[in-house]
Length: 564
Image 1 (cartoon, rainbow, N blue to C red):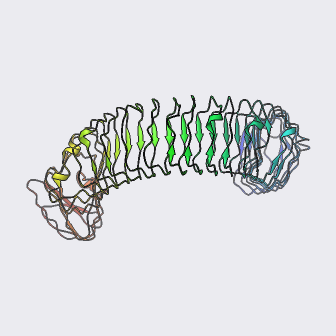
Image 2: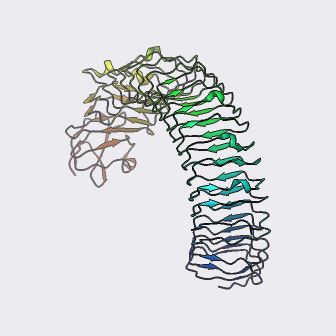
Image 3: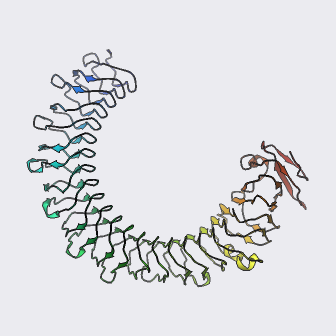
């Protein structure tokens, strides 16, 4: 392969079947970007170019690289990833800044012979390394050694004054190596076999983020760091944490989920904003001694709590306590004046007391055992989403809200000989911003009487009444929806169905009829909405228009619906 061009700057030969190549810069003096990835190269010959800056050789079958006679004085980035290299030659380049050697079969690397004074980013991840020798580099900032088989790292001989990010995750380390670095900010050690950690062995005054998740830790010793902002310890076997000895004035995020904690002691931090404790075995939380004035997010889901801890926080915005064994809850917005989202789903609640909060926007109460909710005592001027699905509600009282956008009541047992007594239209009449009304599987059928649902929201997008056994809607049963509203009603197999609206009536008796989704405005829209099969039936249309169709989605306008 030979190119002669005095103006060629970028040459892309990616994804071909090239088996060999030569580059003589004299024939392409302005070429600075050469892409040879995803070919069939088995070795890299001598490259000579005064202008080449980017060289892509990834996804070939390269087993060796001959660098001794290279002459590429401006080469900045070289990608040799996803090849068959088993060893790495000594790199010598005064210009190289980024070298990607990931996803090869490299078993060892010797840095002694390297001369790369500008190398900032070195990727050796996804190889077969078991040991990392001493590394000396005044320029290296990012070093990727993850997804190898490393059991030890010789940090004593390291001299990397600019190293900011070190990735050693998914290896075979059993302890945290003693490491000294004034520049290190990010240390990833997750996915190893580390059983203990002694933080005092880390002399890293600028470390901001350390990840020790997915190891074999059973406890966490006292941690002291003036710089740490994020500590990730999830998915270990931790049974206890001694917070009282911690000194981490800048810690913002602490991740302790998926451990074996049974108790959470008092915790004091003027900086913590996010605390994740889900999927432990916590039965109690000692909140009396807590002092976390900046905490915004707390997750206690998937534990063994039987009550909601009395929590006071002026800054808490998100509280997850789902999937516990909570039987009762007292809402008092005064103790958490800025709480926006509260999730109590999948507990053992049977009732919901008066709810008062000036800040709450999202409330999740789904999958409990709730039989009644006293909406008339609620004060929630900012509540946007309320989910009461999958409970045991048999009635719903009137609820007025100028803010509610999504109301979920699906899969309850709302039923009566007179549905209006149990499901008053005022539940939606007072919701001026309602966008989604979800009430499928609530046993509302077989007939929805006139005035059953009277919507008064210009924002209404979805009304979902599927799986309610509905076979008939009387005139005016559902009103206040618009052409943009998506109405979904699934018909039971053994029932006929009549649907009335102000300007469109669809009243087929259908064999194999499945769903009516959205009441369309005329045949053009219906072609994209309905899929009927073998329709036959009749309708009652004082002054209305009827549209109906067959299984081939051909539509007719008529006063009688007959088989097609």
